Length: 386
Image (cartoon, rainbow, N blue to C red):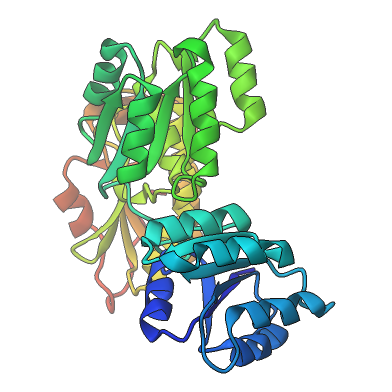
């Protein structure tokens, strides 16, 4: 449920600043120009937080606060007072009425958000229905590690991605960077001295800007105790050294909820292309399998009736790949999609050795596979792969 924030201020400019400050967060901003309007809106909407100006016409902030706290229905709503520099002492005097915090005008938007985030939960807005950014979109990843060789290994291993990998060696550098430009994901070495990793994690989680940022722990595989501690306090996951970069890349994509389907699926010349990479590890197969039905159904829904399954990059077959291909071809049949296979001599030869794959026919080139499939409106011949 979205948080409701009521800003009660006779200055339209201040109300605009408040609305702008909370725009990146999943909350509804309600407005009132004086205490009378503020009480009416509060009674009707029951906001989760009230930002209340002290000096206003009709009914000022002190009177509204007094009436608010005298009302059994409204007295539990937390209030943050907004005051000019000269009114600071006055706010401190009325704090006993029931003020959770105060802020002095003029104020910075990030200070307002930070103070509000201590009172209510501010969740950043997603970029889409499920923040479905693509694996090909840029992202900022912060690595907090005092061993430069480890940072360099991660940077080198992920250089094929559009991600910017920035390394810092200390907790202080990390805090400073997060306050300026919050990263999309943070990797923290659990071996930092004096439990700095866990102190940093707590700071990250109490900052409204990084409260929901995925945080990975990084530790030597044999160090079981810090791994357990990281899991207990709430780290997103733990990566062990020596680092498996492909595993790290997969976990980063999953933690940031990135759409990785474009690695394997795309529409080309009116046909759905599905390409398997050379390295079809169990994690890759699981990833592709999860996309098969939705991506093929999406293609049919968009008016495409042809598919090409390209496995020519593979060096050899194993049962995981065979099961994936069987599942894919069965999905094509269920959806009424024509399909053709593209392979290489090694894959074609290995298929002859399995009963389930013996009848599979592979084209040498994508163009030949696509040409073997009919275009919409013509009678369908036998499928290229059966």
